[in-house]
Length: 94
Image 1 (cartoon, rainbow, N blue to C red):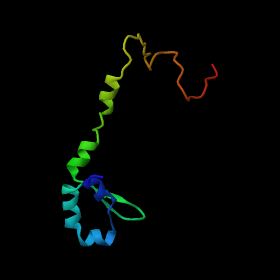
Image 2: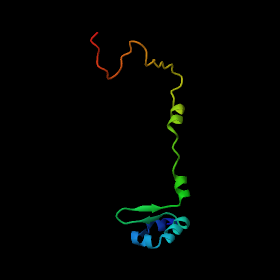
Image 3: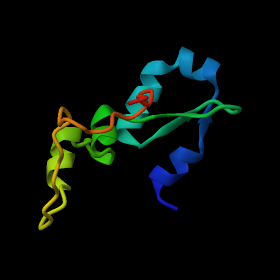
Image 4: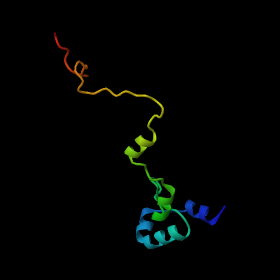
């Protein structure tokens, strides 16, 4: 087992982590992720590590343009077209 893997196994109690916060932060930077808590666990990692692991989300507008169906002749009706049935409206008695 590598030294980094050994350090992940060590669990700091919340009281320990509060009392030795500087050490927890230093070790997370030099030795790898530090786990805090026994019942509900939290992992302390440097911000750069977290950013490297998470992929930025593409804005929805860009995603829609990138995933637009190509090669189809999709006709989008005019919503103000006369005679077009409006959804969720009361039926007329004409």
